[in-house]
Image 1 (cartoon, chains in turn yellow, green):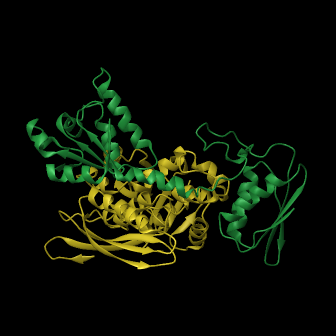
Image 2: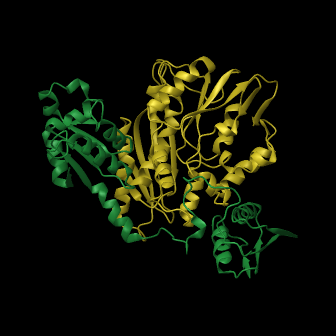
Image 3: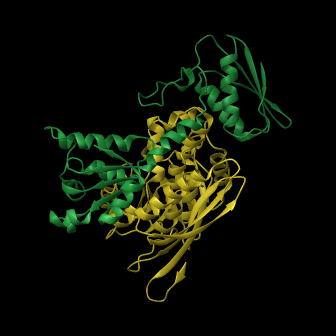
Length: 302
Length: 219
């Protein structure tokens, strides 16, 4: 992040992922939405983007690369940014993403660690994309099933529309939910603060992809979810209070690709924010918990 | 039967466990060797989901999971499953690995196609407007996306009038990354230039280029 000195700040980010779906165009869209999300999670607009592609030309033909980048370009265009170039390398493992430049507008900047006691926590997209991708990889689910298509839709949906939807709404803090899973990113919101805070998460209120709980109970859970959980269980600050049964619900820890925004919003603005998010196409957006005053830094899962 | 899942990454051990359980005769025992805590949790989840009771033996550097295949059919989850569950996956005859190159190539060809709308309805019948809404809505449900929708003549109603029956379906396509292009001159002729709320304005040259390069679907 770079202060331009005129009330605006330039934000640069870089992110890329390995394929999560078979279809190259869709993969391009998802990877781009995932990369662009870093900018939107700070309340900024995307200005321009550069492609970054690692491509295995021995095993895939150039048409695949073109499809991936066409998918990415469609998402860059969708949020009004310009795709201005990029770079590709030969790589044994395929990867694709974007380097994005964004700019804050009207002094709006959303930090991730500025939640206040009394805030309500809202999650804008359903959880479970990591589990769906694992089940697809394992062949326990195929790409035509409705669970897959709703996961694809969610992963390729830009967090961009939340910016406009939340104009005029007071936001205390935001982050986007990606590789560390819901509780991992919540723990980032609790870190690096002067005062303590207690986040309370209501498991029953969590939006999850329809049908994903069954895959979770079949053990189609990516290794990353367990790593996320084990890391949090060991953490001293924030300290995670969770019973054994809840800790075995891996949706709480499932690494998300292009996940939703996790927002801390003052209670009096929460209903409006939720309504606006739903209208903007985040139909699964839900209030999932709240923040309370505390001496310590802690997360309670109920 | 014995299977060795040592050193395997998720979800491979679950796949092997499933295959082994399917191959097992009634009341036979399966032993699974595991040396990772993560794999162990996933395999235990799978066995419990299948309605079986795993036994655990701890070794110096790992675990052996023992499970007896009872006479009742695999796939009966302990609790009732919601109707929307992703089908009775376990009862499928065999695992289908979605690795069909030919199919993927064929389906992704959709991204080379554009829908060309010359009217705000599909055909001239009474149901034309709602039929168009249904057709566009169905395109949104396909697992692969078309590249663009081009709206000319009265089809620019779709991109400007929220009340048009097909507006929402078109918006949905756009939210999925499909380009929606309205003819600028047509918008002007209908006095709708400032009402555009889906997609972008295209001039005749851009639209001609698009139509020349891509295959068209007319509704």
